[in-house]
Image 1 (spheres, helix red, strand yellow):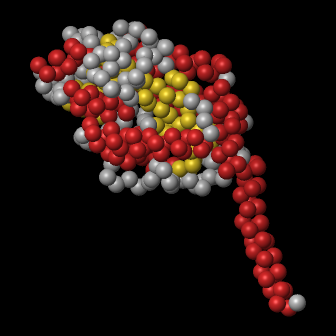
Image 2 (tube, rainbow, N blue to C red; image 1 turned 30 degrees about the vertical axis):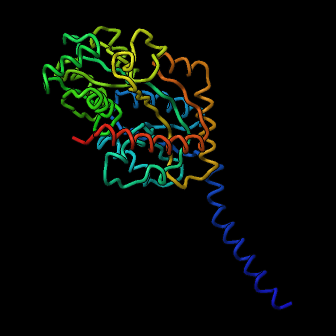
Image 3 (cartoon, rainbow, N blue to C red; image 1 turned 90 degrees about the vertical axis):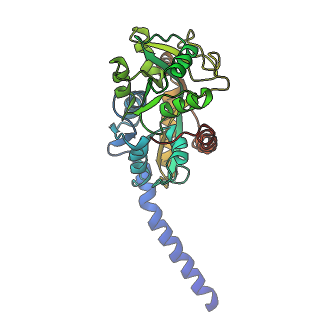
Length: 328
């Protein structure tokens, strides 16, 4: 019997240690959240990413009975905010408003201090939206074909503002240049709002930016919309043709957003956040507000978002390679 006594004690000790380790974790998950949550946004305030983050944060705060504070940390194509969340404590109190740059940046930046596929716990997709190609209203350009002709006749004279190196607005322009052989100067900003301000002022000629930010300026006559970047026209702006319809076949850029936590965040916390987020995205009033802006709600499970991110990373690696896009 003695030979069974030690293993039994060892098993008991192991179980006790496991319980001690899991106890605080389980308790923390059950009491979550008991303090404000920080939602980091990789771009400056005023742009689409920040606007959508604030709309969700307000609803999430009410659902969780705790403040969700939006923290704008622009720079390095979104990498500053992404890295901060990747290296944050995995306790559910630091989240990322993840842009499409999560999938693009690994192909553009040779050295990242985080791995988008390993260092995050995907919580859920938020929505997808088209970019609009818009030009300053004073330019004698009324279509994509006219833009291409003007750029070829005046190489280097046109300038394209973007929300930063490696952003979807940057890459959308690189895809246009690669597809048509035109020469347009890229001017990166820390966010879409600054890029739009300079287009409105005539400091830059054009930009690609998300529909929620551009459409009000188009409707106000301050910029001229030439095309949307998605394969189909948007229900929010059905009169704006697609890039493919405008003479750039095969052009398709669909910008998406999602919420992520640091890898290692307890599963009960991820599940709680995903559940509340999907309730909000399925709420008729909230959905209607997104659709009106041109945003397509995309509720998902964490596993679906994880697989989506993996496929998007592979896709954009191919796009970056084929377009020859590089950081300025």
